[in-house]
Amino acid sequence: MPLIIKDEYPETLFREDGKRLDGRDLNELRPIKMEVGIVPNADGSAYLEWGNNKIYAAVYGPREVHPHHLSKPDKGILRVFYRMATFSVFDRKRPAPGRREKEISMIVADCIEPLLFLELYPGTSFEVFIEVMDADGGTRCASTTVAALALADAGVPMKSLVSSVAVGKIDGKKVVDLSGIEDKAGDADLPIAITWYNEEISLLQFDGDMNLDEMNEFLDLAKDALKEIHQIQLNTLKSKYIKLQEETLKQKDNKKGEK
Ligand code: UDP
Image (tube, helix red, strand yellow):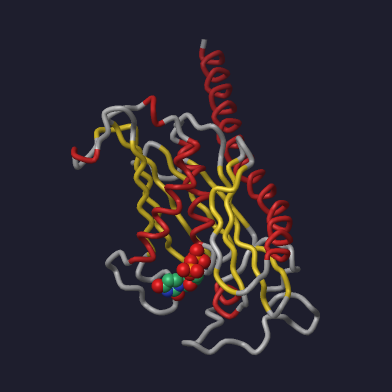
């Protein structure tokens, strides 16, 4: 059930017991569920439920570049298309892609490009299609996280995964992983992404009020959350290969039984 009716926000973003409105502690992530290989038509895919966010990512490539003039003779290109479904938010979203969708597509591409070996794929493209079916705050972080997973599922060589989360300030308190209402009614919002092969920050946006000392505290706060998200990504990929291994062994056993 939506918490926001039009632009009316609650007076406080904390309950009487000190927990956040959805029952979380300050440093607690929303529940996260990830799956890979769920879009049969794509070369690789992933699905992510993160709180109320529901997001698909599908990857195609390496393949011929369309339109041709975008292709580069010395390296492959990465194209990311982030879209939010019209029914994904409380107010109907206009179906045509807007400036926000273009910005988030660019952000996700910037986070992912350093992970790829594009110089090995001249004249080709990798395309990542991200479809947000339900949006409730932090979709740029969730999209970056699920896009990396879909690329790994496609078997695209990567230096590492990238994980992302937003930290911020609500009612003067520092929190991890802002929900939609915390994002809108809170004081500050800081989406962060980290590429694990070099442990460098590949996304740092900022909206709101904070000083430099607070910024450093926020980065510390994000670290544990990012590690937790990375572990879920790795476990999701591993479970796919464990399942494949089990199926192959079962098939072998069945064949032996037939002989
Ligand atoms: N949102 C919305 N309508 C829009 C765009 C966004 O209701 O047209 C909501 C949606 O829940 C989104 C949240 O506002 O997750 C915060 O949007 P923001 O632009 O800060 O990006 P995000 O936090 O999703 O990365």
